[in-house]
Image (tube, rainbow, N blue to C red; front, top):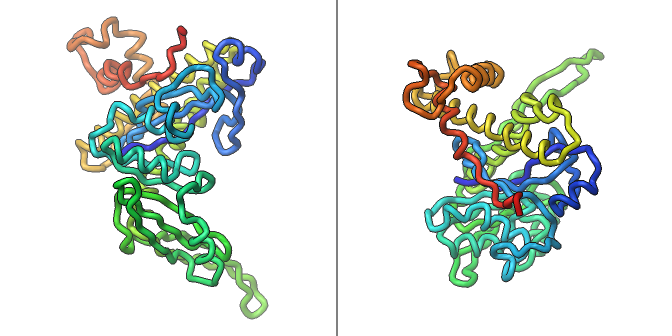
Length: 331
């Protein structure tokens, strides 16, 4: 499963530098750990969480010809470019509302993959009014409605899930089942007055959801988790201060490589130990070993690293191939 989302390269220098050098602009996304800077579209592996491909966001009016944009809308073309090396492999591509639409689902399916996504603004060809009318009446929270259709030879599933009066969350998919899945359980704290005394009670609130929505959200936050590790814990962009745009971008890409290396280590550790996390290094311990390996080992790529190989050194030899940048900065 591949997931498509955006991440940030923190930048608080002069915006004109970016326009002159890269042709990009400053983007502000408040929910990100570093919400001001260069926006980077990314695809990630849902199982391990490592970032696979990056594309610097230049806006919809870029002067550079970009793949698929001659026939597709902006948001659909990005999804296809970020997942292009895996077309025809039968993978499921998951995207949030910034990328989800009927057109994206159709194009992904035509190239040999499957799609699951949230639909919010790109509603062309989507039965939005049907779900809006369905959600206007009082229903149980979590109740869902399914519509299916064959569009351009592709079976498309449209699903609406009731959130509250007047609000139906909508999804589109070309794969998945709509039978009841594992419900969402949230712990709620209630303050009640009993016999004149305020008491606090904790209760579990359970909301049903279909299996399709459960599968969609299973790895939905992998890129946000990657951002928290890179910008909330590692904080290279705060430690290394610079006003030079390419140094800042290099710091971002290097931070991505370090976090990717750590996520590979975590994935392999759990794979070998059967999800047992006892003895597993945290990010800071891993970075310490990684730094020591980079400084003291003269040849971290070869099989024998000064007669010794530890986990960090082995991963260091792999992470240069983990990142591909779609935009060639030398142009």
